[in-house]
Length: 114
Image 1 (tube, rainbow, N blue to C red):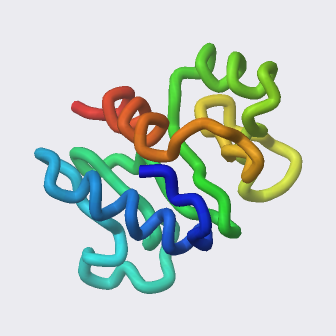
Image 2: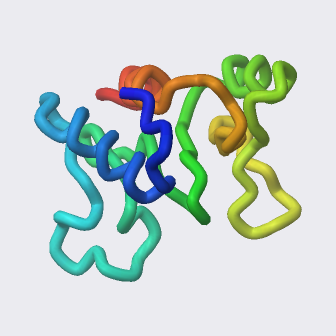
């Protein structure tokens, strides 16, 4: 799954399609009352968010050390939802990154899985 030529929402929809049938995985938009709350456009495992689309960027939850590695390698930045307090375990993947969305999301899923 490369997603080349697709818009970020289309790529995320494809990612959801790849992961939704795995045990314990759910998609926020499919949950009752999810329309406008945090996580409404997020993949979850065991009720915990592991990947989401925010402002057309893939955001994943990974161990802090892994996020540090990816940031240092120029693959993305730490997620800062409110401005001023970046979250140490969340990565916003750079749109120019060559990293695949599926492997990164699968890594995130393994990290947060119960």
